[in-house]
Length: 352
Image (cartoon, rainbow, N blue to C red):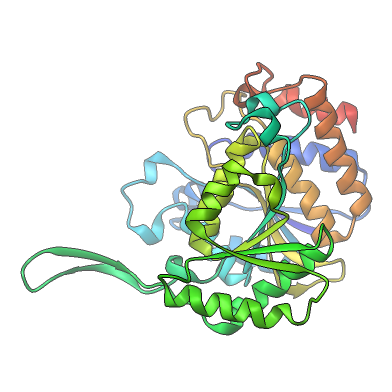
């Protein structure tokens, strides 16, 4: 089991330390960790946010455990040299087209949700977001119109095979949950979304045991706060998925609790190759102060063990330990508590 460990910037190294302590406590056989520079740290040391040696390491590993990227010192760099380009580059180079973001309210955190407790208690959903298409990867640029006005443009597009492969991931995920899939688009306005909807309907014929519904993205955003219990699995494009998954994070109380898995079609000897990371950013304002909540990083480790190494029992143990720590009142500043990074990590280890 070879794992590329890319801690990155800001709070990345300190939350990664806690996740690796949990991994070590599991005493798994034949685990090899490779450490690489990425993001702002990669640029400062190698002149690029995704140095060739880091990319090669990620390509050779069975899975990638990723911290966070983002460094205010790099804000004025050309776009292709900014830290955030590292994660986009990894997704593209490793053909990681499916992002799985579970959002479940942990018992006892109802009062921390932006929603009323009785509404927040309903939340147990999985957002499946396409990662390699849409406006993030389309043609883009700045130009000057004939009358002298500046214009920015971003090209949104999806090919049918790109939609089909993410649809299969979502339908299979729904089969393993409650058997309900909601496809989110904007087919009443966008031709890209109309193709998306048409292809999802075509794929649904192969999954008669899954109940398929469709929802426009603006309505989906409203329903996430109005009645989140209606959702089981949500599948959507890159742009809409980016927004909705962050919205879901506040519905469950804190972005510091949400993990994610980015998967492709590459199979290793152990499972599906993927990149696993918390969905929060690098939080440079608290970096190095021992204040960051490492739970999302630890839960990302659990997702890695489940999807890339087929270690369901170990993944479930980690998730149960995190849930028990929260139930026992171990909360970081993001949850209104005072526990620091190391204290939270130690609490999870104790319950593991």
